[in-house]
Amino acid sequence: MRCSLLLSVILFARLAVANPITARQSRITLPFAKKINTTGLPYAIKQDEARIQAFKRGAHPVAVTKDAAPTVNVPATNEIMSYVTTVGVGTPPTSYDLIVDTGSSFTWVGGNTDNPYVVTSSSVDTGLEFWLIYGSGIAFTEMYHDTVTIGSIGLTSQGVGGSVAAAGFNNMDGILGLGPTDLTDYTLNGVASDFPTVVDTAWSEGLIPAHAVSLSFEPTDSAPVTNGEITFGSVDSSKYQGIVTFAALTTTSPASEYWGIDQSISYDGEPILSTTAGIVDSGTTLIYIATDAYDRYQAATGATLDQTTGLLTITEDQYNNLADLLFEINGAAFTLTPNAQIWPRALNSAINGDTGSIYLVVCDIGTPTGSGLDFINGQPFLERFYTIFDTGYPSVGIGYTSLTYANIN
Image (tube, rainbow, N blue to C red; front, side, top):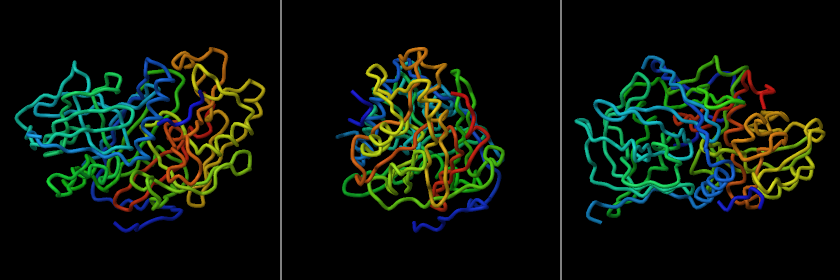
């Protein structure tokens, strides 16, 4: 079976020489890690597939009642299947390793029963409980206002979930939700409301200079390795090269509910995906494109489907002839080189793959072009380009990095 998916007014949108983010004070940068899923890539693909089905459904949290600003660069660890960073919750803080997720907006902890949410002097029970449905997993959380420590700053009265039960997260502690605020919308007793995200709270409390968050991911041929950073409130100019292109958020649903943009894709100069809507998502392990585009990509590369990994595979000769995959976003071209299109060969064992095989990271989204969510630029894309998620000027910014053309894989 192939890796198909079973699964404010816009104020700024142009090719920019200068970033639209306006400074108020210093940014916060958080390093992080990429998490390897020891169950292998087929499980990760199933998570991706289920996750994208949830995207297409526009899944949102379901609320029930109990009765019913200096710069801080926070590290993150690259552990192959997902990126993870450490966040403190409570007073004194308990540390949790959270998945860095731009495809959801709630922050919750306690998914690992060995590291539950700890009620402390700063914990205030909201009286709400939520089912958080991700497609790849589900968590039942009791919602609190609490102190959340990210790097050197403390967010006061941040909405955070303490997990009562969770499944599908491979024993991770929870999720750091960096998606748009509207993803936290819920309705209780006929009244619509939402919880501010951690970025919203940092901005409203004057702790970051701009209402934005930036990600620096890096490809790796070993794991785990702490080689990533999250920058809150600004951009880190040392992480990208040249200019950053900003794309307005798409108006096409359901992509518009997330960090959605419009783009087209070509392979070796030939169009395979016309301009259409999709999303940029740090929580998706691979890259997904509409079925018709996937079929054109497979035919152009000569790849065959590997039944064990669920990925397309190519020979060494086919790899030597592999062409660039070009993403056109707001008039700018972003090149995914042949090396960037393949799974890191030194890590084939992590996906139950053969040592000498070459696997492609482009998968089938499971629906044809025009479905409203026709691509997901997941981790392999973010590992080659610096990415800015700007709420203040609703847009996604993308820039080249020193590793865009690296032959790491």
